[in-house]
Amino acid sequence: MKKKVWLLPALLLAIGAAIVWQNSLVTSVAPNSNFVLLDASKKTTADFKGKVTLVNFWATSCTTCVAEMPKMIATYNQYHAKGYEMLAVAMSYDPPSYVVNFAQTRQLPFKVAIDNTGAIAKAWGDVQLTPTTFLLDKKGDVVKRYVGEPDFAELHALIEKLLAA
Image (cartoon, rainbow, N blue to C red):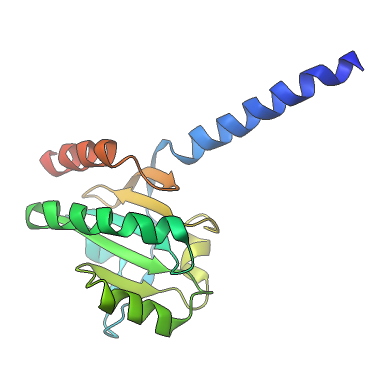
């Protein structure tokens, strides 16, 4: 029986390490992806070079995604004129009509794409949990990944630092 006593603390440590890793600073080149926006225009990852960009994987059925959206809008409005861009990528299982309705009724000011095949989420590290958010620097490198709602004070500080660079 005493041998199993270590199992729970070890499991909790592993879960904690996974959460820290998921929300950690990373530096890697963002995958080259093709995005089809709601207005049928197209963007690629390369189009965001020269701007600090937030790529947010979300779904209309995700309560955390819906709850964080007003903060995403406020962040976009605060930094867009300074060279900040945002792309909200709806997951493949999200009905396109729901995404369009959400974007229109919430008056989302940033670009919205639908990952109808799941290929974009797969390219960005097989994203399955929403929201999952990536912050890119001006060179197109991923400098931060968040799983769950970001700490917006920390996010704003990092955006300001990247915009100043």
